[in-house]
Image 1 (cartoon, rainbow, N blue to C red):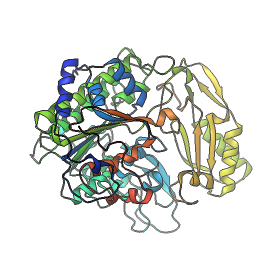
Image 2 (cartoon, helix red, strand yellow):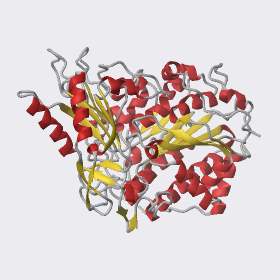
Image 3 (tube, rainbow, N blue to C red):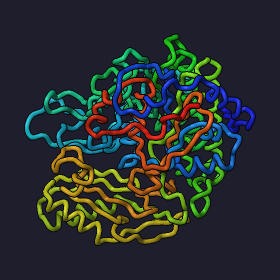
Amino acid sequence: MRLRVTLTAAAAAAAASTLVAGTALTSASAATSSTGSNDRGSGIKHVLLISVDGLHQQDLAWYVKNNPGSLLARLAGHGVEYSNAQTPFPSDSSPGMYGQVTGGDPRVTGIYYDDTWNQDVFPAGTTKCTGPVPGGEAAYEEAIDVNSNSLDAGQGLSGLPGSILQMTGNPLQVINPANLPVDPKTCKPIYPNQYLKVNTIFNVAHDHGLRTAWSDKHPAYQAFDGPSGNGVDDFFTPEINSQALGFPAGEDWTSDNAATMQYDSYKVQAILNEIDGYDHSRTHHVGTPAIFGMNFQTVSTAQKLPKSDGLTGGYLPGGTVPGPLLVRALNYINTEVGKMVSEIGAQGLAGSTAIIISAKHGQSPTDPDALARVPDSPIIAAVNAAWTAAHPGAKDLVVFSTDDDGMLLWLSDRSQAAANFVKQYLLTHSAGANNVSGNSITVSASGLKKVYAGAEAAAFIGVPAGDPRVPDIIGIAQHGVVYTGGKAKIAEHGGDDPQDRDVPILVALPGLRNGHGVSAPVETTQIAPTILRLLGLNPLDLQAVRIEHTAVLPGLRGSQS
């Protein structure tokens, strides 16, 4: 599939103008209230939410400055740009995207990462739930697909990848329940939406009779249906970690940046179909959703891959200027968002559609000279060996780990003494690593600058000690550390580094002629109540908003002209 990756300045300006020329909001003051009625008189009937995974605020600012005639520059010039926005911690896609659609961080959503351990479940495949609950892996990513090596996640479509838009809009049809953790109370598999503790913006919209849709990278995003299971009317969730068709065997859609663009373009077409009033497959005319959107992976793989398609990935030395592969990726995003904006105008929806652009997470490090790739398996093996040596007959202490550019560990012994043992070991042992050139280096303290252990970890998240989902060890990595056993990537996310968490939020509103910036600190969780308020719905209908008092994004009052 050949992709056009540039958008001329004239085309970009015309596309953005269709949004800017829309009818001004009747009452922008409603957009800043944290309470209120369900009056939908603001003029906004649709909100398109776009996550450009990996995108930093500095990337958006660089692109706008260097491409003043671009679509993104036009949106920024006629939108509200939040220059000091952060994702929740940990900075993974989960919980990052969950925060944007619930208004909550992990202490409320219960989502710490896409692959974790839960001390209060039976392992996947359990059919007899007797005896003590042993705990088990809670994987809500490609591992739960019927077939994770197929783009349609095992649906069995013929003619892939060209037929992928015919993929089911109900991810439950391609999720294998035998791969899900089991609830000890019911002895039944826990589906993604059941694992999420709070409702979503899709649930609130659905409860008010509004249509919803969402496109993302795994069927596991069925979680956005919320605990009630009725949030999203139309999903499109092609499996990104499946074999990339047309590429070498063993490569998924993230292994080559051109493959990622091809993959993302399927989701863009789904959005265009939905703008036109169809379902994602363009089979049924159902009306344009009130809340819909997608994530892009193209920027993320351009940041992580050392090289792809003959272009160097990541950033130039110093970490502020994108390298050639990342520039191509940013041009691609500009083009594809431009298609959406143009279609919104063509369908006469410019005066009633708001667009929000953000990111599930950033990526670290941006400066290639700061990179230290640290194999994490030897560290965990050494911790377990030290524990069993000190406690003859004991089983391995670390039962599960998730390590990207931070370290989350779950322990078989949840005592504070055991957690302190791990903390002490990690902080007093160095680890082997390699730099961007592949040369061997050594990092101190297992690559960590801070470790929260046991009750400290629970307090850091804000949950009671002994919470069954919270990691027993939370390790904050030194800047530049990426836990990986190979040399296939030059950046990662998931930690607490500012480059992991500093992302853009850009809100483009109909009729806003003169954009402005807001420098006050905000969090991406504030996107959820903002979407509801823009639609004239009550943000307090979100359970996480009530618990965390998540505010609507500031600075929208009087934004229209």
